[in-house]
Image (cartoon, rainbow, N blue to C red; front, side):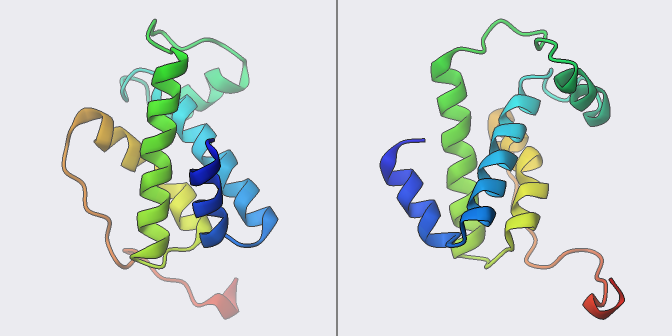
Length: 122
């Protein structure tokens, strides 16, 4: 990550563990995005990633990885700054946000989740 992005995201995710988990989630979303534009279901793609298999595409260049990282970082900043989303919600949503961006499809994040659980019951 370049220095300016790194510091902008660090500002929004001040605790180091949260920042590391965000970065890990973004890296996972980028890796997952190379697995066939959702030709595979997510579980299959994640299994192939764990087995260290290479995606069935030949355009995984350094520039393409950086472009996808930039898209994710822009989404993370927007979701955190504008909508006040939690780090975990951002990480959970990142593969979808990235996929929609790569496909050129409109996607607007919902302000609220479709389901809700009382934190006292967790």
